[in-house]
Image (cartoon, rainbow, N blue to C red; front, top):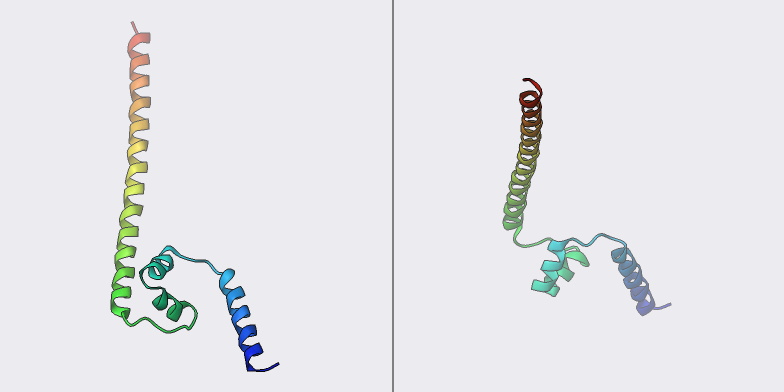
Length: 100
């Protein structure tokens, strides 16, 4: 087996490994924006040239995630308050109609 055979084996094992990994939406966006940049990062393992921007994006996404989590918690509290108000209203109505 010559050098060509080894490169084919390496390529097929690399393709197999890539087929089994999770593909994130940001990676799809990177591919759509520039397939060469995606290939350099995903296949060749070259680091991105815009590390600061990527870190800023991660910080922004983390901040947004905390905001979403807070909004979900507040919504749950609001539903609980609504449920308590409905129960209180039913009890008050029952008490008002039952007591002469």
